[in-house]
Length: 267
Image 1 (cartoon, rainbow, N blue to C red):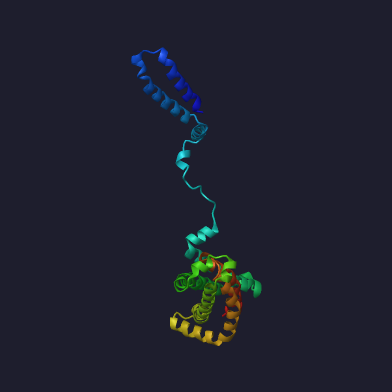
Image 2 (spheres, rainbow, N blue to C red):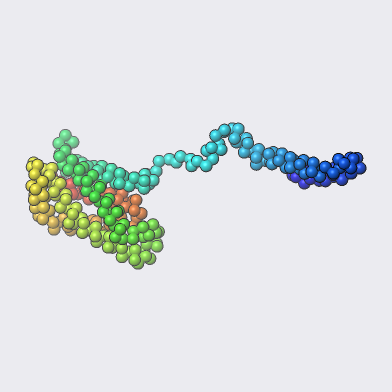
């Protein structure tokens, strides 16, 4: 668009040689240069791009202020789980264990709603928040992350996971460690919590002794059920990204807790 104006300026410079006095003619180049700059500025201001931007600004005076702002996105559970993983896990664990117990009482044992054992429901609620929510998150995420190189393996595709020999070794080691914790910490803790709710005693030593006695009595059956459920489940749980590790685990744990409530949750 600028070439016609430049052509006119050059033509004017040539034509003025015969009509303008010599003294004035000397100033023509500088005048023409200034005129060219003015015309260039006008052309820039009236270019289609700038006109479009100006129209947008007139339609929305705050458009330039909001241009760099990231538009608000809709709520995402995955984003919440990444931002508040501990809160997310404690909430899931508490609701899950309480719901699983109610399911076991009402749907499996066919207990009338009016006869629900609320002490038993409280046992699973407290156990879910304390052990499954807080402690389990601490050791399965924080401790495992320090012992094992979990980030690289969990962020790979499933095809790459199957080719990662070192990652698979770490996966089996995590599974073995978790089964050990379930056997020697999870089950005894559950029975101690149960004794604390049902024993009728305020003495923690009574809870401990009663809980460990029940743990030893039921060890063979409990351990058999625990391994056949959690060995395959752990292989999946320890393969997904860290922020989904415990939420995925809770899906399996819901069924397991319902079974535990049905078989071991009563007085």
